[in-house]
Image (tube, rainbow, N blue to C red; front, side, top):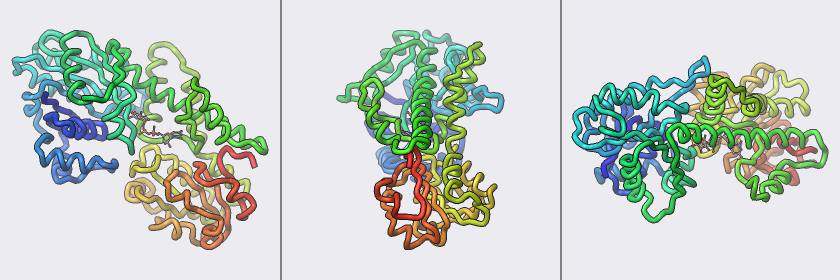
Length: 442
Ligand code: UGA
């Protein structure tokens, strides 16, 4: 089997590298020449643990080839499209990259003699494969869908920081299809790719597969906003602790333990975008999804809890120095997209605070957003030095090593707000001047 992957962003490159790792011939295509040059020189445009090694190995073995030329996909049997589908300001999804990619693919399919399958991995509103992609392919290829070429929806559920594991060993594979020939080709590809790993295959129609992706992310986001609501309730009731509540309710098999970690809200390139998109999609179809609107609203306010909690200990923050530990939207990534740290820092700055920041990996990315509004530190120790207070914003493992002794040694004033529950209240309460952990009712 020879597969082509169009759009070498995070999902595309991970998919291409993992397919090639499993011995499948892959041609990765992107219109961005710079990106192709970078990846060819083993430099990835983003950080993902283990991915650079996989890309380098497969380029070396020639299982992975890279190009800006769509003609190179003609020798493949399946084209996986993974181009970006950002949200527009009016709440609708921008499908222009997808439309362009489909047209370029269609022009190559026109010259092919055999049946070619186009698999959509980009996150798209229900109806896109049938209403936009299939017509674009038909127009440019001069062939009919399910006759000259096949189309399927194959959404992606991988997480940043865990992308390779999630790709090789997914909880499920969702396949939206409309014809048997396409199904057979995709099943042949899956057999080769997953080999002995038994996948839970969910076979549905195209629109349902497209909706499953949004529903999956919207549910996880709602679970987070739910536990953050419980955390905010705990904060008001002395002696309660959200960590204990989450542990107990997570033992109920109907609830489950994952995605019940309370904090300062979710960020990243997916949850905020996809929750907003599904709200927009529902409204376009005449339904107001109030639950999801509240998921979003709770998440927009949650970062400010950090500042609120700090203000209980230091009511007037003017002219203080605050150390912010963690900038990336989650650990093990340099990604700053929709990172809650940015909101928190802007709020602190508005109150007249001098902000010192430290992140083990995301400083360079952070500089593009925060420019010279903060003081960048090279180590946690440097960040804490001379600070009047500290807020933990991202749960990097390094921050778990903090002790009351360290704070006393480096900080001017030992005040700590743990926004991600990486420290234990038992260790800190009463040992430093002021301590608050999100969801821990002192
Ligand atoms: C998310 C989904 O988890 C993936 O399944 C999906 O494929 C991906 O979006 C996507 O649509 O491409 P990702 O954004 O990489 O993956 O990161 P997550 O690990 O899901 O974390 C998202 C945010 O939720 C982070 O800010 C994290 O700190 C926060 N979070 C997560 C919590 O606050 N509490 C939790 O219990 C879990």
